[in-house]
Amino acid sequence: VGLTAKAVDSLQADTWLMSPPCQPYTSQGLQQDDQDPRAQPLLHLCKLIQEVSHPPTFILLENVKNFETSRSHGTWISTLESS
Image (cartoon, rainbow, N blue to C red; front, side):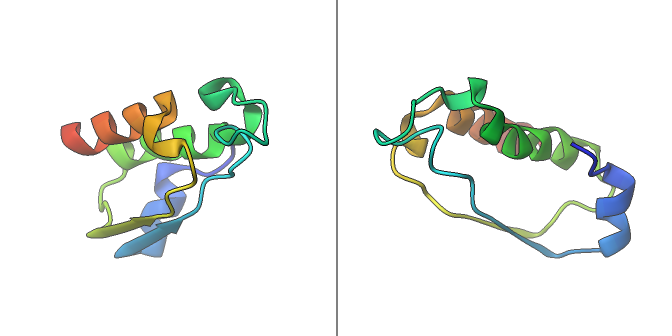
């Protein structure tokens, strides 16, 4: 993924609106969770949020069905709690 902390900081975004793809989590998909390549952008943002100088004040994240019980969700919550 090519998005860098420097690029995110340059936007000075106060709010992030995020929508993870549903395929890694729903019963219609293969339910590969964080092993599905389509989950990687969200996991990359977990890393970026710890690296940016100006993290957002607000984050709006769509709750895709089964995301709330996924490993990706656990990673997201751990990231937020440690940031």
